[in-house]
Amino acid sequence: MPTDLEQLQTIKSQALASIAEITANPKPSYTIDGQSVAWNAYLYRLRQTVDWCDRKQAAQQPVEVRSQAMT
Image 1 (cartoon, helix red, strand yellow):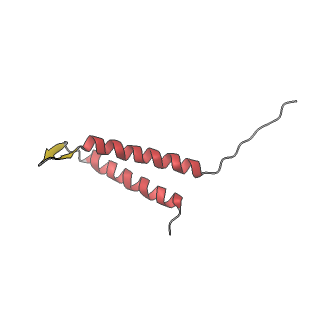
Image 2 (cartoon, rainbow, N blue to C red):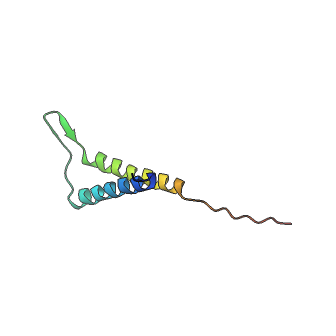
Image 3 (cartoon, rainbow, N blue to C red):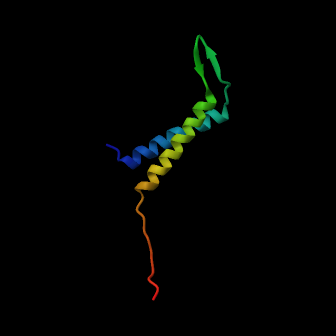
């Protein structure tokens, strides 16, 4: 079973691949038989997903804090 970090990396990779595909072959938004497809909104959500993955990955990374006492 993949770790949380591996799952985040997979989700981010999939979102980035979708972004690359959409921006390489842009399509217009449209409505057919009452069903709407808004590519700009979909692209926005994919970018939000990438940002979310970045934040979650950063939160899982170890942090080192260095301090120095002044006398």
